[in-house]
Structures are given as structure tokens and as C-alpha cells.
Image 1 (cartoon, rainbow, N blue to C red):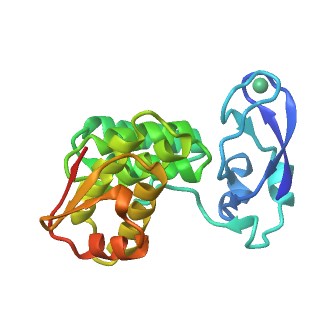
Image 2: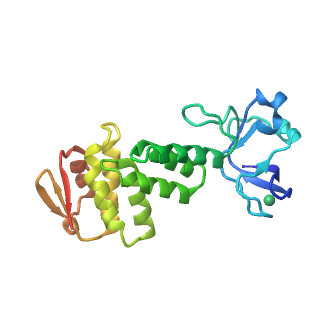
Image 3: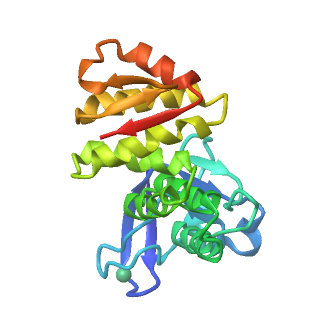
Amino acid sequence: MISLAVTCAECGAAAEHEVGAVLVDPDALDDAPERAVYVAMSLTCPSCGAVDAHRVAPEVARALEIDDEVVRAGRAGLSDGTPIQTVSEGIELLRGRAEQNPGDALTWRALGNFAMRSGRAAAALEAWGRGAEIDGELECALNVAVDAVEREAPDAADRVARALERLVHAQNERRPLQAAYVAELVRKVGAPMTVVVDGDPKDASTIRDWSRFGEALAIATRIEVKR
Ligand SMILES: [Zn+2]
């Protein structure tokens, strides 16, 4: 962590933020040093509450020492290279793409993943929730199920059931891990359910060997949940 001095573009207040990841664009340091620093988490002004309205003074930007752990050299951008100045800008761009293609689960997944990496859990869960509504989308459904189980939400079992049924859509290389993960969610949620794996019904309350259950899920061609 380093302490980064900023001023707020909304109210002008100065603040120091403890940040764990900063990207400095060496090319911008000379021409536009105020645009050279990207903070990988959203910053909230302690005076007025504005989010991501922070400005880094040119002398502060120039004084940042690249250590490749907290301060790295590079240009902030989305995975397709679109440059961004703040986390909020990234979220807005990705949300705009998702809303233009609301039936494309990949856009919601990208938004959710970016938001979660950037410390915006509420925005992430909202995006994954939208993605999880799309048929066959496993990744979003899995993230939403993990959250519901952790919160002990009333609909946690439904969300786990949805993730279970979508395991068959997993990418091959990710599937063993995701299957083990979902098996663990079934154990944790502890709700009555029967998981029919390739026609073989398993009553969740009678499962003792959860790793074997996960292995069965990893190779199944049909998974159906009865509740
Ligand atoms: Zn402010």
C-alpha cells in the first residue's frame, strides 16, 4: 500500500488515500501528467462523497516510484485496449456495452469481473445477476450463487441449483474446479435437494463424500435439480 495525495474535482478538498495498486503511464508523465495515474480501486472523497472525482497533481504523479508491486508502469484500459482514467469510467463503458447487448452474457460477465476487481462489489453483483438470467451462462450464475450462500440469502438454494444445472456448459479446462466449487456450495447451503446426475438421483442430505460428488458433477452430461 502507498499513500496517494489527491484533490477532489467536485469540492476541491485534499485527501490521502491508501491504495494497493497504481498504474503510471510513463508516456503521459511529460505531456499530461494529471492523466498519467490510474488507481485500480474507486476512491471516494471523504469531504463530499464524490466517487472517482480525484485528481492527482502533476508533481505527485512524477514523484511516484515504479516498484512493480504497488506502482506499475502501464496504461489503464479495458481488455480491448479502450483507455480509461478511473474505475468509474471503466464501469460506465462496460455497462453501456452490456445494455446495448443485454442478451450477451459475456458483456455482463466482463462488467461484473471488472467491477469486482476494482472493489465495486455491489456493481459487480448487479451485473452478474443480469448475466445469470441468460440461459446457459455459468460464470455469472456461479458468482451470484457464491454471494447468496455467503449472505445466507433466502434464495441461496435456488441460485445454487441454477449453477448446478449449468455446470454442463463449463469450459473443459475450468470444469473440474467449478464442479468442486459448486459441490461445496451444495454442502454449505444445506437445503433439501435432489441432484440428478446422468439419471442417477442423489439426495443432498445423504452425500458424505463431497469430493466424489464434485468429481461426478465434473464429468456429467446431464444435471437436473429437484427441490
Ligand atoms: Zn469532494
